[in-house]
Length: 123
Image (cartoon, rainbow, N blue to C red; front, side):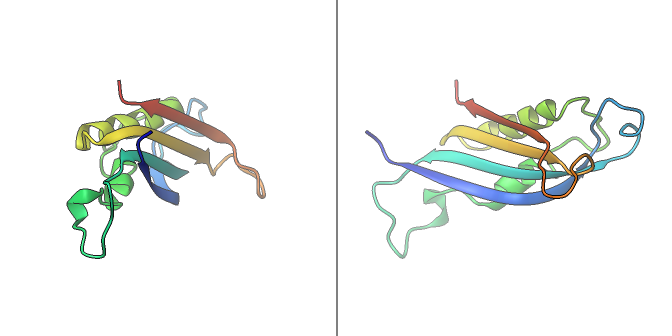
């Protein structure tokens, strides 16, 4: 059995053009992202291990923000999650699996979390 390393960014909020209802179209809405990436782990991480032995956490944030096409409208948040997965797989061949949880904050009331989680493995 091989070791795995999971990198995660949780509760990152970004404005995205998404939705199918008239009150959602034409303007971005806040989405809360939690992204988890599985990488093949190095045999050992020493105090002086360089960054290239892992992945920059900011790449996860980038995939859910700047990597989304500016002004593009995604009807489904599933398509947003798909784009995030694709971006992370293209960025780094060591990425074995990506899980993207998206919560639509505009629909959530109180503490509820309305959204999706998409998990993809490298094919």
